[in-house]
Amino acid sequence: QVQLVESGGGSVQAGGSMRLSCAASGRTFSSYAMGWFRQAPGKEREFVSRVSRRTGGVTNYADSVKGRFTISRDNAKNMVYLQMNSLTPEDTAVYYCAADAGIVAGTTPDRYQYWGQGTQVTVSS
Image (cartoon, rainbow, N blue to C red; front, side):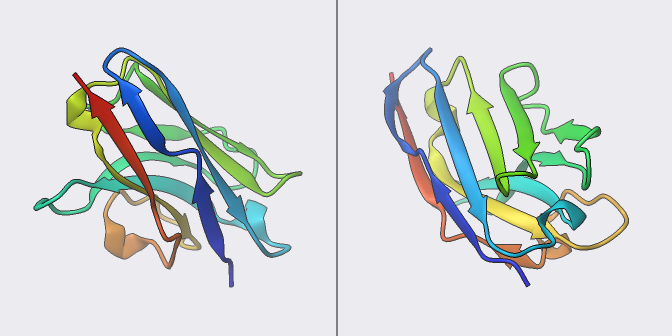
């Protein structure tokens, strides 16, 4: 089992940058693929990005963030990061870190077994 705690959210103006962090507990962190999701008010939770287990050599991004967001992991520190650049008001949401113990890569929330509590990101125009 793994516990996840996000940090780094806050408010920023459009065009700015922000880095989210997710701290994971447990000795088997590297065996989980990690993902970031977000949920805006009145909307369903949506996939943002995913990094593969172990070395994190495979990453996936939603089309809406491709080229602006970068996901990375540091297994030595049990951390996963989401660097967000060129933020727009449409990026405003609660951002969630999630862990997937499965083998097949997934981009839907039901594929992830463990979730953090979320961190608010607000982008003003």
